[in-house]
Image (cartoon, rainbow, N blue to C red):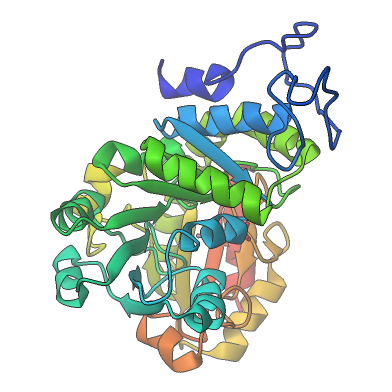
Length: 380
Ligand SMILES: *Cc1c(COP(=O)(O)O)cnc(C)c1O
């Protein structure tokens, strides 16, 4: 099945009870049993819920995995991955990553004796120097948030396999429309389904997708044992969002390209970060592993000035100043004070997240209105 069909039918069958085409919202905490243990596959809704199962099957299908798991948030999904580890284990993570992931690693899991190395992974060969016998996991994001760095999944897989280390890829920015890390040999794909998967800024959710049964079984155990699941209503909304993922992504990419090019040519713009540019340092890798370049763009206005950046984001009218990304509506953010405020300034600036950086999540509105909005906001 091709991707554009999988978004609509992947892992989906009409509901067994009445043939409902959309999976019903099984808003129940428990399921009747005829005799102890005599049930129809569902006992208690933390463990399983039919609406969540439908979503988990759809997620597995989209990412070319065998198993999908849905969680109450992206961070809950990452939390579950970290619980595969134990005290003394080490993780090598990209240094340019979602601020909340950095916070979870450093403020929670370091307390449990897990050691993290945050390194630049634009050149995958950098990873090797940090590997020792305790290294159990490589954590990557590509494109990275918010610097739009590209990490070579295939090259990272080769290093992980050579040393028998698990590789997890946060695929939130790319979505399976643009890249499927499991196809390159990654072990775990993670999503903040809050973003493009849901696509309508109406839910908070996380997802993990894997191929390997042994890893899947461990993650299902953690999902049930720790309990950070998503509810049936949110599962339904995510399923509904997935149905249009391919058409939304197509427009996100078209609008993203037009806006990246507009900003690059703008006299008040100093730097634009978008992997579709030929002069992006890892453009060739982006071309190799992604089908298009997405709708996430970061830029710095001329002067690299904090107050000016704040004024620009305040001036935007069609773009909404807000946290998050990946919805149908265009959003603008100021990473240094918003999404990445939890990363210390020195660590942040080392990766390029300067005080004047602005991040855009380009929506699927008419691109002329978006460009007009940027034009007026930048004319200060
Ligand atoms: C938002 C985000 C997360 C965290 O997901 P939540 O659903 O907000 O918990 C993780 N990674 C990336 C790249 C994100 O954008």
